[in-house]
Length: 412
Image (cartoon, rainbow, N blue to C red; front, side, top):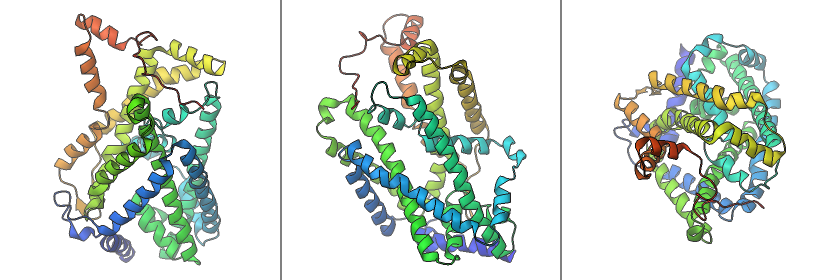
C-alpha cells in the first residue's frame, strides 16, 4: 500500500512541478498557458520549420539523424536494461500472453492505432512521399521491408521497456503488473523516467533517452506536415508552387496556435482527450473509407492493373481478399466496438465529466467530416436523377474528365 501511494505521489509531484496541473480544475477551467512549455514548443516548431521548409531534399538529410539515432539509443538502453537486477521478471511478464485481453475493444483499437501511427496509412504521408518516387519503383518490396522493420522495432522496444520495469519491480518488491499498470505518457514520462533516475550513470541514460523521444517526435512531425504540404502544393501549384517557405511557415504557425490548449495548466487533460478520441478511432475511420473507395468503387481489377503497370506483376488472391473484405470488415468491427463502448476517461484523480465524451466524438469526427460533406456536395451538384447522380459519383473519372492541372507528379 505504501509503495502504491509512493508511485501515485511521484506522478502527482511530476504533474505539479512540470505540468502545473494543480492550477487547473479540469476541462471546464484549463487555466493559463505555461510559458515554459510554450517556449519549448516554440523551439521544437522552429527546428521543424528549418528542417522541412526547402522540401524533401532538406528533410531527407535531417531524417538520417532522427531515424537512426533512436535505434542506437534503443540498443544502448536494451543492453543496460538486460544487465539490471530483476530484468528477467519484466521479460517474462512481457512475453507471457493474457488471452482475456483479446476480448476487450480497447486492446484492438490501441493495437490498430499503433500500427497506423507507426506505418502512416491514413495520414497521407505515404502518398506524399511516394509521389517523389520513380514510376516503376518497387513499392511492394518497400512495403514489406518497412512493415517488417516496424514490427521488429516495436518488439525490441518492448524488451527495452519491460527489462527496466522488471528492475523497478525488484527494487520496490512489487509485481511487474503493479509497476506497469500506468499506460501511455504516464508509463513513459513518470515510471520509466524514474527507473532511469535510479540507474547507475543515470544522467547519461536520461539525456540520451529524452533526446531519443525528441528525435522520434521530430521524425513523426516531419512526415505528418509533409503530407499536408505536398497535397496543398500539388492541388494549388500556381498559388503556392514558388511560395513553399511561406506556406510552411503559415502551416506551422497554425499548428502552434492549435497546440496552445495542450500547453495550459490543464493541458494534460486535453492531451488525454485527444489521445483517446482524436487519434485512433479517427485514423481507423479514414483508412476504412480509403479501403472502401479503392477496393469497391475504384475497383480491384483496375487497381491491380495499375500495380502491374508499375511493378510488372499482379497481386495475388491473398492481397485482393484482404483489400476487398478482411481489412474493411476488421476496421468496421473495431470502429463499431469503440462507438458502442467508449473508453472511460480518467487522469490521476480527475474523472472527466460526461460532456467530455460528446466533445471527444466531435474532435474525432472533425478529422474526416469533409468526406461526407463532399459526398453531399457531389450528389447535389451532379446533374440527373438521384440514381444517375449516385452512379456517376461512385464511377472513377476517366483521363478526359479530370480537370486540367488536377494531377501533378513529383517524381525525381
